[in-house]
Image 1 (tube, rainbow, N blue to C red):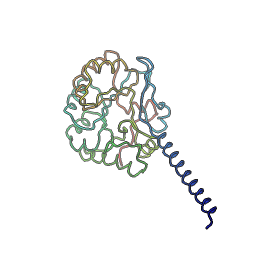
Image 2: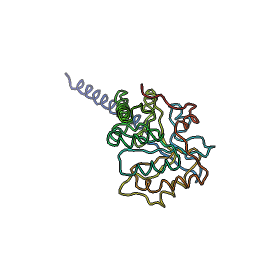
Image 3: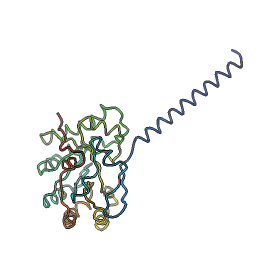
Image 4: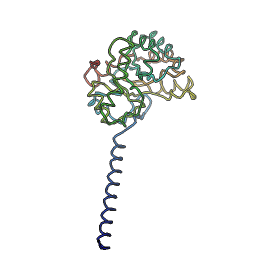
Length: 273
């Protein structure tokens, strides 16, 4: 092989490697662009927040983050990743105010806290699906793996409660991609984001009572889907008073199946077959 031919082949090889590298980079950019972490901005106190997807865009995937902004209604939701001794107090406060809520539980929580999960269901609360491992679900492209994350948690609920788990889903840490929303929808799930939350999950940096009220009262709005964590000692201590203050502001509490009636025109999702 002559020197000129070797040089040409070497140049072709370098070119092909460059094309491959650029293609890989672009694919990664597309993947990164597809994934998102749920976020909110609040224009002014009392105004409805703006999410990084609109209510109309989410409704196409049977997903929601806010209800009817013309109604003084709040939808209470709690994420339960592990038990920290606060859930009983939270359930007591909800019962005192006849306030329905949705608890999004991971599979191990169901197995480790069967009495609390049974109490949630017995007292009329929705127990929704927060996956088994609490992974970043946007990284899961395989439909079978995605389904297993939800089905294993639903199976644990079925064993503990004796009936099917309602098909409501909350992505761990609010990390999602359009593909995930489609997969959840194909499994019959409705995806629940939120429009009001605060930093209550850091165990070594729990907010004070005053800090909690500043966020949760100052940013409350019509149709709010409220996200709180059952592991928060602050939430366990203030929930009764917080619900009282919201009631004094004219708000009432409704179940998230009512939320989906208002934003997508549908009510309760199908249970697992």
